[in-house]
Length: 290
Length: 286
Image (tube, rainbow over all chains, first blue to last red; front, top):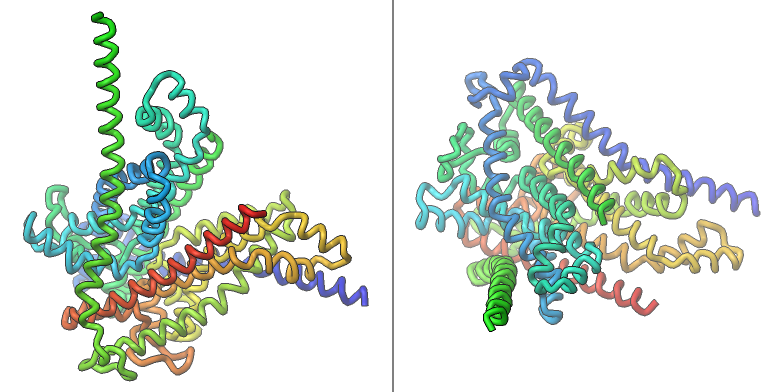
């Protein structure tokens, strides 16, 4: 009786251990399958040709993804310029200025923003932002600017949540010390508390960059999807991102074209890994500071 | 006399500065709230009038653009995904919290990989699912569900871990003291106490599954019928919504579909919020 109990315990421990291995296995498989299926295309096209090639015309055998890399960078940078100031200031408001009665409502709102599916954001962009940009700023509406605004909105909850917890983690005596020296509440918050939370806030921004660069559906619906290398002054023109190109062309791509799209996924994956690693490094630093 | 005046003017200047700083944060918060409010109100106002009975016809055709098959597929996809992700997610968390010693080198590796999974964009999951699961099961609900299961795994793992960690040590000690084994303690004492926290993680995952598009287009596919078997292709509501707005022919129906998606997400968020605040209260009392 006791023996079977011990055996059962041992078996279940092994079962739990196996389940814990799944995430390791998953990451391993994802890396393996992406690299194995993506690298042959990169080899065939040539690394330099693939990453720095300015022309993407699979019909003619031109597989340069520079326009898409630059496109992803533009919309991400735009999203950061638009989303980060609003996000950080909203976080400051939530952590230090928000009246107690409003707080739960605001917090629920931010959570809801994080939960809204990207297709719904994309649709909103399509029916509201695209006509808005077309009519009041110019161009066809499907543009780098429109995608930046939409992504700026979409990364808000990420930045707000991470920044708010970073600000809340700042030791109270920073703030109290500043008050004791005669600074106002506002000055203490902006001069002492926020700077002390800067690593945590920066981690939030990095996470936001990851979200923006990986976002697919919403961008497809508003960015115009033209795989053309754009100059920084062509904000009102359409652009294609790495993610959008994969979804749009995978439906009919074959052979080398298909492999080149998977290779595009590999490039995206490497970008994301770099961003993730910098996020964990900065987060670790933030934890050590506070 | 002059000194007092300058003091006063400095105080006044400081007050003005403080007022500006405060106003800026209020403005930013107002922008955030207004964007969300505008999005919800706009989609509801434009979409609710188009919620016609035809949109919920049993069979989809290009005339009625019914979303009911897609809704059924969403439900199937959610159940399938959770059936895979919950045992693995909770099992991993149990191992990490209840079994692994703090010096175990294996634990940080699991944590790191789980964190990596959190950051991977859904399109990369979609590519992986297409390359890996499709080669075994073809374009099917099963391929889609397995892809999504990996995607929500870290969510369930993390929330379960937190829930298990928040169960007081005395519960376990009490159970051991009464002669119960480790397994019995976990299943009869620790898991029930951690249930609300675990449940909020599951609800959070449901939100992710319902809203997912990019990972499903090339794994579960875009077939318009309700999938009668897990080996059939089927589009979920989000995929349906994307295809509707891409075609651009049925904008009214797209609005209506957006309403249904939005309402689903609001309900899911409300439930998970309620559970989370319940958990906090419980801990406040304990």
